[in-house]
Length: 237
Image 1 (cartoon, helix red, strand yellow):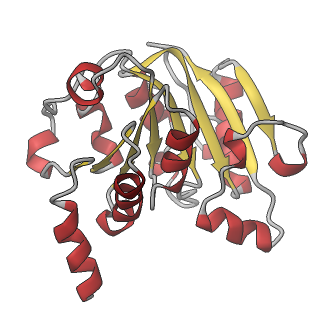
Image 2: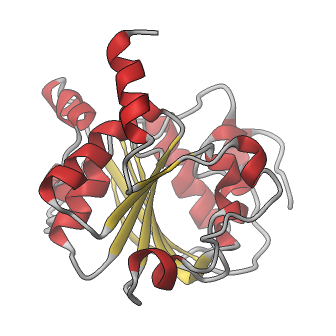
């Protein structure tokens, strides 16, 4: 393992804004902050917004800078990536942000019912061969239902036509209320400063003239979620 990466792993153990529980601590177990993030960690009643698969935390940090009246948590399994966002937050004194290093499959071990207001999925792996691994699949949406408030928002930004169409079809098939949908965000006329936060990879996509897709929909609590026909044999949960 490169020396720089090892150094960052060591530094992250000292970062007060990063949680790195061992797998055994949260596999089928509740993290100590579950249901207690507002009072025990952030010390306020502000809305909590997650970025899942946050990478270097650029979007999480961008949101936190722009909205000091909300709390933001970036989640990723790659520690070397999270280091960048966590380090930036500490340097700039951004106190309304935290990072969790864990697998997204374990995310409902960290949050209690209705504890989260919104979820951002910014350029997640489209998982072209394994639909169930998509962070917008019915499998994951059912997990999000456990802690997202009633009709909480799911935001998807992606350069992937496949992921965008799959998620849109899933939302339509399950009668989720769609607030925004566009296959070309920066030529859509949507005036929203949040959507103009651009990650390193997004800038690369734009330089290649790739169109950025955006979808925002409400996720109702406790509903059965059916997979779209696009994914093959429908799955019911």
